[in-house]
Image (cartoon, rainbow, N blue to C red):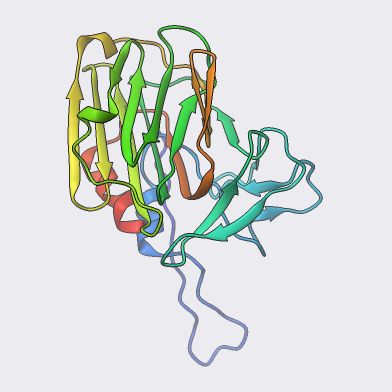
Length: 242
């Protein structure tokens, strides 16, 4: 296991040309969560990859080019409160990535208003996973288990309020944990979710439910993905940054 460590260097008083690094302690805490595989730097001036086609963002840890599915360009806007966000307005401007393999589960996070869609890019029965909104309520599927939107008892997503959503899948225990904002946390258990092989391709803004596509267009901030079921403390660190 590799542990990443970041150091903040403050500007040196009286020393010309020195400036503080543009990173917070909360971001450092997230950077050191084991299994972080996807973290775009959503910034118009410094986050874009110059000359890329389709246009891309830098990964904050690796400097890799992270691109939309197919579009030659995309927009950066913000959420209520000022959080920078990528604008997903079509299938082509959805964001997709691949991890070599998930290790006993996966965790996905983003900050949104009333619209969310995160899924595997897979039509195969059994390896599918997704979460999306339905009338302000959250619904998800992992393998053969589906949570109906009518059974969701958490905060209702609304257009005027930005909220963090964390979707953690633990295939070893057969559980899914939802964290919505600072107040709602619930874990769902079903043996049907145990030991499934999560498809390694995942995407934000477009839900693939075994080949049936559902668009969930909107503004997405703080896109994050981990190749494992991260700890509760790590979830708290993400919420602290968001």
